Amino acid sequence: MIRVLVAEDHTIVREGIKQLIGMARDLCVAGEAGNGQQLLEILRQTPCEVVLLDISMPGVNGLEAIPRIRALSNPPAILVLSMHDEAQMAARALKIGAAGYATKDSDPALLLTAIRKVAAGGRYIDPELADRMVFEVGLTDSRPPHALLSEREFSVFERLVRGANVNEIAQQLAVSNKTVSTHKARLMQKLDAHSVADLVRYALEHKLV
Image (tube, rainbow, N blue to C red):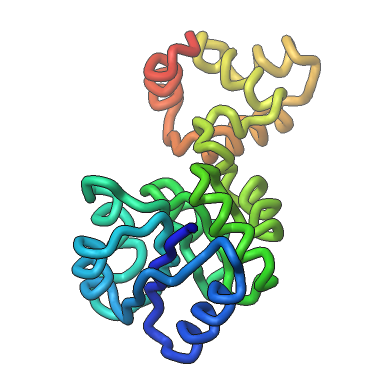
């Protein structure tokens, strides 16, 4: 039996989730909390496999609660339930320790699937959001920023790091200076670099040179 603790400050939403979980034979509600502080207190006394965590609760919000839950001696898996179907928010939640991210307008059956998946040690991202995350955030298994560069951008990056200038790179790749400058601007944005020196530092840190 998978025990679920429901942390949600809206009573109606919480009751709906409890009913939904109650209909599944392999799931049960171990407890409920209306705010982050209450959740942390209940977790210290209530064993469970999954915390269904609303991200925008009063007091200690969901994002703040995630590291605190992860710091417990036997932490449950955290499935964030949010009204924000925002890629950046999901990326942040997963980065700091959530195992899954579901949105409140997702199919109820999918929510049960998500609970089972994170309870088994897996990860879950709302399918519609997963597509957007790949494009908007590039967070699939927290890949390093250079994994987001296109092949051409990576070629320009490598040459810049080795000391070539825009004109030389344009000749080597048989493209115009303008094209190289566009690739350079894009890759610097993706790597959060403001100068070629920043690129060199990044390349050394990630053992790319």
